[in-house]
Image 1: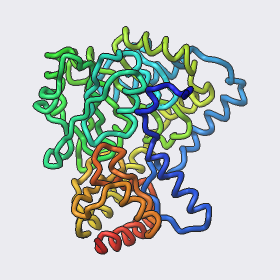
Image 2: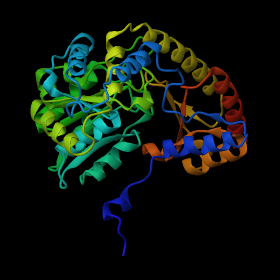
Image 3: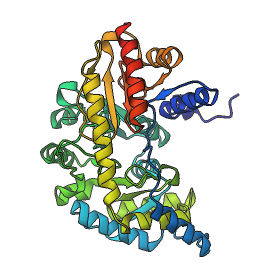
Length: 388
């Protein structure tokens, strides 16, 4: 007899974390690994953020806070939504969680029952379907088209709706494709959601990492109807290089916010107290480092774009956001696990298999790494592709 819950038979471990761990183990053993696996900035957390956290520790801010975070941070997040996204939220509608991943899971758990379906456009971030399954609901994956830049159309959304559909998960800018939805595309999706009374979980963790003159549009900002149906997820991991701090947040209709608060009060309780003061400094301090980060990533993005376009047996769609390329490897003729295993063992290049994102004939390459690593890794990747 197994003591493990039956639902875990359908849950896959995170392949992004697995490939990063495998590459690190090989590197620790002295091998020269060019890793494109990272889903985190390679830049350090800005010093003023670390200083605020240290000061909070020294001042004894090490005790419990309210379950969904300190009031001053929730107020700062509400101010951020107003200034950056044009959305007015009361701090009572905001919950600070233990990372944006935790934010997504809390939102799904708060809203979805076992009979519900959640529409997830593919390619998707690897954890979405597993979160839905952990909540007892059913993921309904919709394959998007490369010719649409991997973006879900309103027609595809509408065709995927059943009587059990409860939620759509939208991620813009997208991981792993870098796709950025326009205001018109979001409005069309919202119109469908409104007509069928479907919630939208809008994961906007990469909102500041946008290129090519594109603009981030927050789903809840397009109309009052959109705001009433949207749970917005964001956090501090990517744009402030605070991945290990584990701080994300949700903004939602009050009824949903209250449910998230109850869930959190019985699971994690508050996010780490002193880390919250670092997040407060992130929002209140100078934002110039964001501009510098975007410029650096854009330089790397353009370099990778120029190189990948010349490599045979692969196809790409130019990413407008985040820090990834989804490389279509259909012409190579290997499934993504075999391909990434060969890349790592024979060519010492770490990439994430597309299977993790619901598109098996692809791999994800991150440019959240140094230009030297990118050049070396692409040289090896080109050699691999030419051999196939």
